Image 1 (cartoon, rainbow, N blue to C red):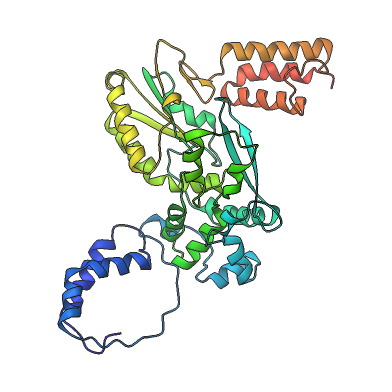
Image 2 (cartoon, one colour):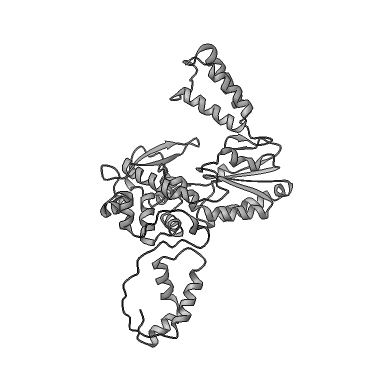
Length: 410
């Protein structure tokens, strides 16, 4: 604290407040950086010698951002020691699991690694990297999901990974529209970085040290050795660009906490896209990395220009659109979103319905043993799941399939 009051101190406080009062609580490094570039503060340091007395730091408290964050019912964890106790860990164990120094990037496999890695082929011919946390870390992430993340509401436009939302609620605003624009975000989970996750927890009110520890538990940096394994299907420039993105701490695809955190980290993007869609007379919804916009005749006339502006907004927020998955669907063609045809009512494609109905009919007549031509593990559960999906979209058609399903002699 200052021994005597200086006239420059009041204006400095006002400048700091004006600079940081629009967002969440600033980090210490941001405040220090601002002070070191503030002309008034630098002039005061040159003009006089200030005697500074170090005071005991006041105890940390929860400090949510103004507005709705103050109403969130979250556990009050003001120190990393309290966080460790809440998770049932020792402080050294918390530091190990959080891996704030990106230690995970240096350990590819073995008992010290926190994740298992495997490649999953994609329909496009490429592959995605699944980062599955080991059981103990997965249990910690599940606790964070149940007791913290699920209590923070995402944007209303987000329909994926949310209780009470489904594919049907995702597509319903776009049914019967003149034009539908569908876009896909590239490297969805890997594009959400450590700093964005820290900002979510700080907005909720957690002190910076606690927010960093929470973010460390939920993010991962992929070891370089994973890209050298013979099982890695990527090559050339695609491999290099993917490596640069995954080697930084990011949300791992395979973690139970990643979907909810991705929704929260995209809150600002959802706000901007929803506002832009309203200004253009359109509707906007998002299901994970799939963005959909739709509107009537006026929107259809400007859809190309609208598409360009949306891509620019996405890039400003640190994401990228997958160009080859972009679709502009007008009323004269089949408008299909998330596997659902939305020209008139939400429904699956007629050919898919006929194939499933024929499969069920053959199971009734000849038995299900020889009907699993695609080699699905758990054929009965596979059929039941597809029927439930159709019931969600079109109860009448789905019930006819359910009646056939119940006649099968398993």
